[in-house]
Length: 113
Length: 111
Image (cartoon, rainbow over all chains, first blue to last red; front, top):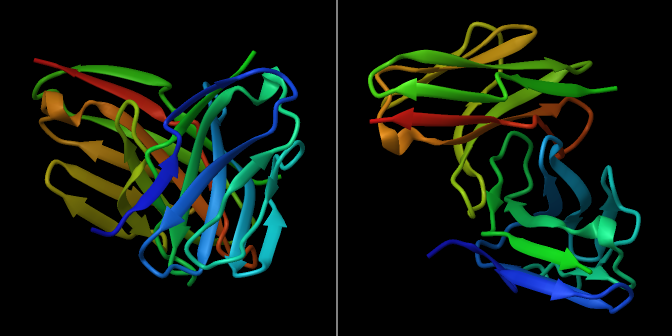
């Protein structure tokens, strides 16, 4: 089954404790992206990747890191999480051509205490 | 600055009561406008892509239309299972693969 898999589904952590949210897709997609979703603000892009070893900042990259060492994986790293990073996070992928729809993961609800 | 707004923020309908959701956008050049449906606790799922003013797409009880400034998602005779948050997103010309999402409209259809 074609899918984007995120883990974990729920995560509670404390300020400053490094964490990684994993994202994997099995569709051989070139494009992958991370979003955060906050009430009233919609989905905001954090980072995106056009292909292996090619990443770039989205609209809200501060406090986040990503890497794209393999085509299928695109982990999101919070090196020193803060409470304002409490949010619902989504990973998405697409074949990479313009006008191609995004396939989303099921989301990771992160709480930073 | 590119902007995507949606109205209303929330909408409650009785089963069978038709209505429309609005998505207004300001981009320098539209490459595509996308509608997604998001159920609670899940990721958004693709519904439609519209490319040019005057274009329409239909799927079951949903019809999406596009003008130069906005898009409408018309819901005809909705059922409770149509309850969800509906998101629109625009892809701008010369902006690659990236999207700008609106905040969404939360639709509740009561039996």
